[in-house]
Amino acid sequence: MSEGSVRIGELLRQGGRSFSFEFFPPKDEAGEEVLWRSISELEPLRPTFVSVTYGAGGTTRDRTLAITARIAQETSMLPMAHLTCVGHTTDELARILGALAGSGVRNVLALRGDPPGGPGTDWVSTEGGIEYASDLVALIREVSDLSVGVAAFPEGHRDSPTLENDTAILKAKHDAGAEFAVTEMVLRASDYLGLVERAGAVGVDFPIVPGIMPILNFSSMAKMVELSGREIPAEVLARLEPLQDDPAAVRAEGIAIATELCDELLEQGAPGLHFYTLNRSKATREIYSALSVHA
Image (cartoon, rainbow, N blue to C red; front, side):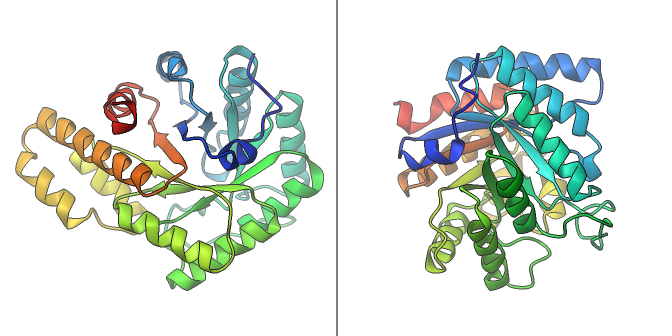
């Protein structure tokens, strides 16, 4: 059984290095098998916590709840459920929070979520719902005793007009009661360090954990980075573009780049690393075992 009452915010503040993994609810039975195989392969690494994402517009709500509850009840790992504002009234959100607490889950990542039309499209309000992640944080604090994390963006959220505006939004989430943040995938260590510096300057003093996603496939990563309104750094392109016709070489170099990035982030004081696993464990295990911290 996992330590259900443990709060991730408190764990991160204790100063040890955190290693965590993110999964998403699969669409079918085959995906379910892949997910649970990955979970069992990563469990021996004794992650600080693991998180389960929430589909656009709450489309995976029941599966997110079921997977998070099962991790809480059947594994030694500490689970965190994602929760978004999209498509939910405040009453529905309160019910979901009650269901999480009732299943032994004690940690939640509060997100505004992407608009129903996808990243970059206009936000659609839900009648009787919530507009901002900071309001969701406040609601969680009001109706539950869950530990609350939020998202942070190394280069600013794609909808934020300026980095100052983005930092002000992070501050609002902090002031509403968030205890820690996990970033969108970090592409350069300097972007993460800039975020931490900006946050500290406005009084955001909670731990900010960098998100890591290795480039295993060039075109799919390019698409993912574009969706977040960013570009793959020139220094990364310079290493990967010459290998584009050799998928195995791209994967190996992508793992090497991610490992170097992780080492640099930890060296520069990051409280840990949060791996976006895409429900596969191999690349994450390779990077984890290659980190200098284990040398």
